[in-house]
Image 1 (cartoon, helix red, strand yellow):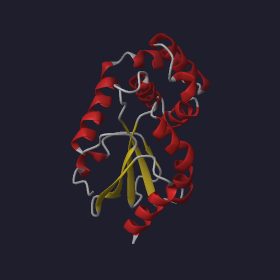
Image 2 (cartoon, rainbow, N blue to C red):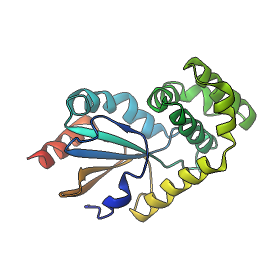
Image 3 (cartoon, rainbow, N blue to C red):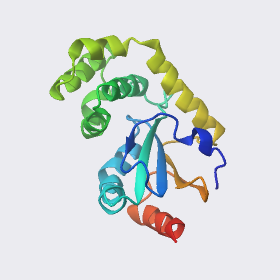
Length: 190
C-alpha cells in the first residue's frame, strides 16, 4: 500500500539516523506489544547496522499504544516521551523493550515507580521526569500519533511505512523478518 500522508507521517517524533537519508521508515509501535518486542530483538539491529548507520535510511518512532490489549502501554509511551524531552528517547526505548517482562504486569503505581527507576538508570533529572509524566501535552502528543495511525489504516502493531515523499510509502505490517525490510528498502533504493 502506498501512503499519501507524507506531510504528517514524520510529525515531530523521535528520529534515528541521518535526517537527510534518502528513505524513511516510520514505525507505529506499542512498547508492551510482544510483536513489537520481537521486531526490536530480531530485526531492528540489522536494519540499524545495514541501513541507518550507513545513512541510507532514517527511522521515525511513532506512538501506537494498544490500550485495550496492554494495560501499561500508554504509561510506557508517556515515559518514553518524557525521556525524549531529556534527549534519552532511544536509550529509554531500548530499556522498555529489554525489560518488557519486568514491567508489563505491574499495577499503575508500581509501573510508574519502575519507569522512574529506569529514568534514573539513564541519569535523567528525576524532578523533570516526574513532572513530565503528569503533563497533559504528552498524552495529547501520543493521542495525535494514534489518530494519525488510524487515518493511515494502521490497525495493529508494529506497522511500518517505508519510502519518501517522491516514491510514496510502502506499508509493512507485523514483526516482519529482516529480509522483508531488506527487499522493500532495496527495491525503493533503485
